[in-house]
Each structure stands twice: as structure tokens, then as C-alpha cells.
Image 1 (tube, helix red, strand yellow):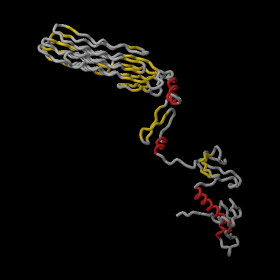
Image 2 (cartoon, rainbow, N blue to C red):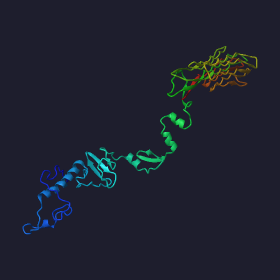
Image 3 (tube, rainbow, N blue to C red):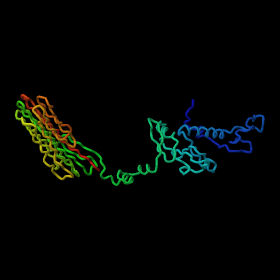
Length: 408
């Protein structure tokens, strides 16, 4: 077991250094103790005695070197004074300690004193072995290559072109867009917000302007009147909501209102008009709802048709484009056993309630079809009978919608 040498041998004792060579046969570093030291001084006058001071010196330098390695782990730098006045020549990779700093020689035949360009200071804390760093170190690197990880502690390389390096070097999105010849990116769609219930629009970060689509609620379809013997009745379909498109540069939240869909006319002996759809709005831009379909009165003179829901009021505000809602169709009575309720009007984002037909030879009543999607009108109710048929409700319109397209 190795023992710590706390103090070099003969550290404070008498010491005489041993020369490198000696022509007189005395002890020297090159030959050591010669033959004369093995002779008996009592019987041979040429015998030499082992000098205590030189033996002390030999043990001293050996134990001192061991002590320095045990204490610091690195041999001290050999100065010119240590080497008899000449600079010691270190090999490449040699590690020494000087002034509390550990250095490694970067060249062969290194005779300079650290710190210098031929020496590299070794950090006090050395990176321990790491699987991730080892994966990177194992790559056969080359020009125009970029390392990337394919899994935990596994890496590969891919080509990195000049274009790729140029893009990576850009400091902002605007600079990348300019490099690609896309200007400053103005007009780039960054997000879409859709509102199907009233609320407040808050711009997404980076939004410079928006295109807002506003669609009013669709009107409800008319109900049919109760029909007497040999009579028929058919309500008209509801109109679609008005449609508006505007451009706006928001500076903060914007109020959004979604118009409700109109209800179909209620079932009642005389029939009832459908109610109009509600007005949708984005800020100051508004799109009125579609008008409700007129009720279907009872007739016994055939063929005949009824009134229609006359679209909607015009949209308001500063618009790119705007149009009133489309009218629903009127009901048609072909005979007392063959009639069609009016179809609800389609919108840009919804389908109106379909026209319900009771074919020739049929009897009874049918409620109007409900609309689907957004901003479309409900269908009208219909009845035919050779005796008496009751009233049915009209189809319901659908609520409006606001769609906000955000651009950078």
C-alpha cells in the first residue's frame, strides 16, 4: 500500500548533490555507485565509502518528487536553474504545474516557459465523460455539415447549404423575408378568429390589419293556416341575413355581436309570419338579419302562390362589399292535395330550410324545415286536406357569424 510522504527525506539534513558524471569514479547520476564502493575499505585502499550527504541528497530528490506528485498530482515545471542553466525541452502533450496553474505542451521540443503560445492552461474543472458529447465527438465532421440528434445520445449530420447558413444568420423574421424576396411580410395571414356568439375581438400579437366578414341571422319560415275542406296553405321561406366585408386596423378590443336566427311562425289557425333574424356586427359594421317568411293563408282556388320574405335591410358601415339578404321562396298551392312550402334562403355560410312538398293525393300538414349553417332562412310550413288540416310551425333560421382574418 502506498504511503504519503509528508516530508521529503533529509529535508533539513546535510545534503551534497551528486554530479551528472565523474571521471574519478565517485558516485554520479550517469554511472551510479561504481565498483570501488563495493570494496572493503579495511583491506583495499582503492575502496570508497558511501558519502552520507550524497546519499541524503539522492533520497531527498526522490522523495521530494514523489511528494510533489502525491500533493498536486502534476510534476512541477523544470526551470533552467533546475536543468543546470539550460531550458528543458518538453514533448508535445507533457503536463506541468507552474504558479498554481496546470499547463499542457502543445508542441514537441517545447523550451518556452508557460504561459506562452506553446502551452495551454488546463481548466480547474474538466468536463466529465458525457454520452451526449461522446455522440457528437463520434461524428465524422466535414465541410457544410450540421449535426443534429436522432434520439437520446445519438447524433447524425445533414447538409447545410449557403442558403441555410444565410437564413440562420438573420436576426429577425423581417430580415429572413427580405432575404427570400418576400418584402417585409406585410399582408401575411397570421390567424383567423371565428365568432358564433357575441363577445369581444382581441387582436393577435403582430396583427396590422384585419378583413372581417359579418353575416346577419337568417329569418324564420312562415307557418301555414289551418285548412278547411278542399283547401291548402303554404308559408314562405325566411330570408338570409345581410353580408358585409370590411377592412380594419384594430388598436384594441372590438365589440362583436352575433344576430340570432329568426324563429319559425308559430302554429295558429290563421298562420303566423316567421320572425326576422338578428343583426350581427363587428364594431361599427353591421349586417341586419333576414326577414321572416310570411304566413301561408288558406286557399281553395288553385293554382296559387303566396308572398315572399323580402331579403333584409342593407348592411352599414365602411365596407369593402356588402349585400342585403336573399329572399326566401313563396309557397305554391297546386290543388287541395298537392302543395309546397316555401324554401328558406341560402347564405354564404349556410343552407336554407328545404321546401317541403305534400304530393298529389296526400293529406295532412308538415312543419317547415329548419335551416343549417349560419345566416340562412327557415322553410315554410304546408298543409293540404279534403277535410280539415291543422297549422304547423315554420322552420327556424340560423344565427349569424363573424369571421376575422388577421394579417401582419
